[in-house]
Image (cartoon, rainbow, N blue to C red; front, side, top):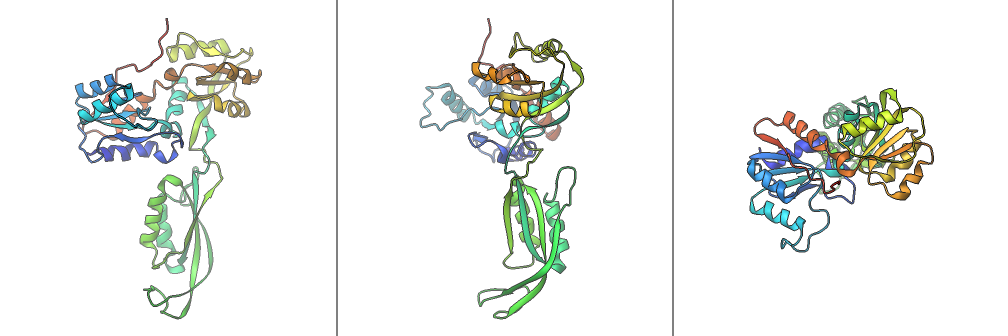
Length: 364
C-alpha cells in the first residue's frame, strides 16, 4: 500500500474539502507514491514524534494538528517547526495532517468527545455552509435511467436518511450541429428536436469530480448540457462542534466532577454555576469561543470547549455554563479515534498509537 491509498482512506472519514480556509491539511511532507512501512498516529508532530516513528519503523505520521501552518521561507533548523520538517525529510518520513477536516466530520473530533461523555441524540453545533451542490442535466429520455443510476452510484441523490433522490421534468431540447461536430443524434446543419428529461440531483461538494465523471461517461451527447449550483441548505452531517443529551440529567457539580475524571483534569475554568440540572450539552474540541452564540441559541445547559478568554465568560449571561477544559485536554482522544479507524480499515502493516504527550502546557 502506498501513502496515497492511506490518504484516500482518511478522506473517507474526513474529506479535506471541508477543512476551514485558514487551515493547512493534507500531505505536508513526503512522497505520496512511497510504500508504507507503518503509520504513527499522533495529536501533534514534534521532533520526539519523528523519533518515535523511526523507532517503530513508521514512515508515515498521521497527525491531527499540522506542523506547517504558515508558509516557510527557510528551513534551516532554527525553529521547532523547521527541525521537525528537516528530520522527517532526512529519514524519509511523510507527515499528513487532518485537523479541521476532522473537526467538521460527523464522526470526528466532537463525535469522540460525545462518546467519552456519553451523549445521545447528537447533532452538529455549527453546520458548515455551502457544502451541498445541485446538478441539473438534460438527458435524452431513452438514456435517462442509465445516467441517473450512474449518478446514484457516484453518490449523488443522498439526502439525510434517504438515497436515490432525484427530480425529473420531461421536455424538448433543440440543437443544431456545426461542421466540426460529431453528433450522436441529429444531422450536421439541421435543427434537431429531442425528447429529453431535465434531471436534478444534489450531492456533497467533495464528490463533485466523481459525479461529473459518471455524468460524462454515461451521457450520450458530445456536448453535455448541465449546470451546477451551490445551495444554502444546511447539511447536518458536516460542521464543527456537537450538541447532545445526557441519558439522565445530572447536577452541575456532579457533571463537572465527571468531566474532570474523564478528561484527567486538575481544574476546570467555568462561568457562574446556575444551580440547575445538566441535560443538554454542547461540545467543541479546541478553541471554541466563536460558537458560544450557537450553544446558547440551541439552549445548551453547558458548553464544553477550550481557550476561552476573560471576556468570553461574560457571554454566558446566566443562560448556560461555559466550561474551558483546555485545548490539549479537549482533543486528547482524537488520536485514539484515528488509530481505531485506521486499524479497522487497514490490516497489512503496523498502525502505532503515539505514546508521547505533546501537551505544551504544564501545571504546578
